[in-house]
Image (tube, rainbow, N blue to C red; front, side):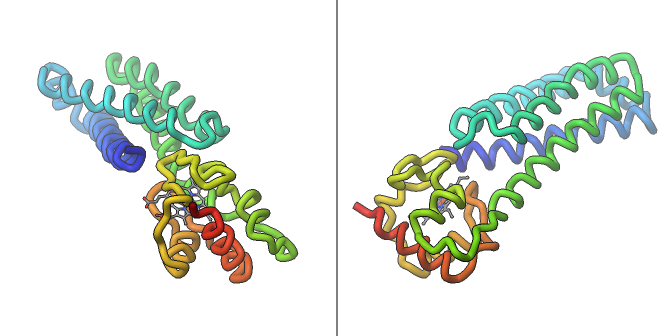
Length: 203
Ligand code: HEC
C-alpha cells in the first residue's frame, strides 16, 4: 500500500513539476500559447486532477510515515504550500517573478525529498558498538520496523514474518529497497550483528 502510494506520488509530483516548468516556459517565451492553454477546459481539468492527486497521495504517505513530523518533511510541505499562492497569482496576473519563484520552491521541495532518502542511510555508528540490538536502535531501524520488528511503518515489512536468507537480509540492509534506505556506512561486523538480531526477531 505504502509502496504503491509512494510510486504514484513520485509520478504525480513529476507530472506536476513538468506542468509548472512548461507553463513558466510558455509564460516567458510564448505568452499567447499560455493564454490559449488557460482557456482550454481540458487543460484546466487535467491540472486540477494532478494537483488533487499530488496532495492526496502526499497526505496518504504522511499518515503512514514513521516520523510523521520529521523536520525535513515539514519544510518540504511548507515549501509546497508557499508555492501554491505564488503560482496562482503569478500565472494569473502574468507576473514572471512570482511564477518563477513558485517553480523554484517546488523544485527545492523535490530536491529535499531526494536528499532526504540518500541522507537517511548515512548513519555513523562507532565501531565499538557491536551489539546487534544497539545498532538496530541507533541506526534507526526501530523507526519503521519497531522494537519487535512488527511495526510496519513507511511500508516496512514485518521482520517477524520474514523468510529472507541471511545473504538477502544483508543485501537489503546494504542496498535498501523502496522506502528502506541503503545503509552503506555500517562496518561488516555491524551488518553481521544486525543480521543476527533481525533473525532473532522471527516468530
Ligand atoms: C524508512 C523506513 C525503514 C527503515 C529506517 C528501515 N527499514 Fe527495513 N524495510 C523498510 C521497508 C519499506 C521494507 C520493505 C521493502 C520492500 O520489500 O519493498 C523493509 C524491509 C526490510 C527487510 C526485509 C524483510 C522481508 O522479509 O522482506 C529487512 C531484513 C529490513 N528491512 C531490515 C532493516 C534494518 C536492519 C534496518 C536498520 C539498519 C532497517 N530495516 C531500517 C523500511 C525501513
